Length: 388
Image (cartoon, rainbow, N blue to C red):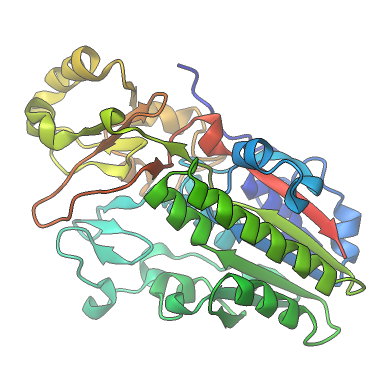
């Protein structure tokens, strides 16, 4: 199995963010600008708009979106970060850093500092869904991120769903930007256009739409429901471009990851694998498509042997330290907690297999679409570009 490592040297969303930061008057750090992106046009634009369609993979766009307005403006595929999942990639969009530096490596993350597995985006513990904020813990203090809006020399705006208005994670990454709330797909694009027209000064607008991701999880990315929603997004995108004509705007549309659909027989559970469960010191962390395993010291050889004999058809086993050394999570010096957050071993799932674990008190995981693995369908996201 080939280990697909994102091109952090010029072909990933981390590089896209470096291009945007530079174009809005900020200094580029470790990650060079995105190769092939016209930096002059980006810098000269009065408005730079980054529209993130959560879950819209490049393969979906070219396979299901032929003839769409988005496809007409498609530049090329670029890579999400690893793992290609919302917690890691959205953190890159909000900080300009890859997971190597921002340290967020999946939906479930072992926080050694707290002695707990945390669901990063809801900012709560996994075991009892306790809000970390109620214990006086803030994302700012725990993560120490500098918001990307604060790296720029222009006014910033974050166009987010109203139901995320109280999200501690999003508010912690807002910095000095203004929060603009929307109430659905049409309003997301409408609020984005209205923000462009607020004033003539240079600005950066980040707009986020989560609906494609939610429907892909529930119905599968290959479903008719998702295809219908894609058409709605494309129509709204076309209206946005029409509305923005003459505003000297550069509209970049991208995503945080793509999807694969896992049939029932490919959805494996640790709960059905008692030997594997006995080897683990902690619950599985990371993602169903890239799982971090914390293994009891006296069970390591048993774990390795069992995975090879029982799960070899479904997963490739790596020492997690090897993944760090090979640059899977980014360039340069790693976050001081990165090694602790990716476990002793990582299971990179093959084809359309997933591996989950249901803890006591948790509801059954009822999903069709998954992401977080290292397949091209999950890793490649579209760079769509339009000048208005």
